[in-house]
Length: 158
Image 1 (cartoon, rainbow, N blue to C red):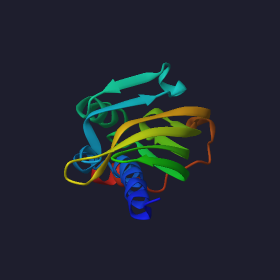
Image 2: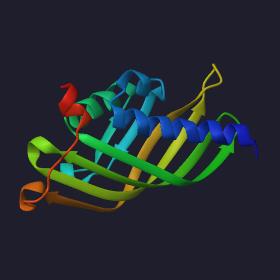
Image 3: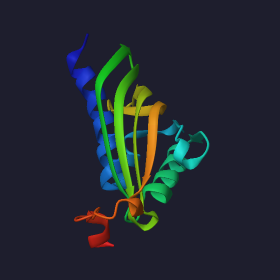
């Protein structure tokens, strides 16, 4: 197996997660192929969500994770299979979403199933991403009187 290729694919996934958390939408755009697809099966939003095209994925993420919403995404334990200029990957994944305006905290875990393509420029990008939720829990932060959000990068810069 080509270890350099394997590392490039891992970095594409890590970059995707970092850009979502830091709301770096322009940088995130370069991690996705133009015709990328995404399936986000979040019970918090009430229904499975599917998107076709980089612009549709970015619009969804900006609309639902922008503003003062805090997210942290962590993925590891990748199982990646490479065949020429395409690859598939499965990742263990955990996330936390804090929405201060809605007094809600969401925590969950899933397995991402991704497809990657190497572009003509030699860069690996995500062609499909989606996950199967293991669990998702939601907590009203109003129910925890002692809870204080002591830092929020997005509230301080908004």
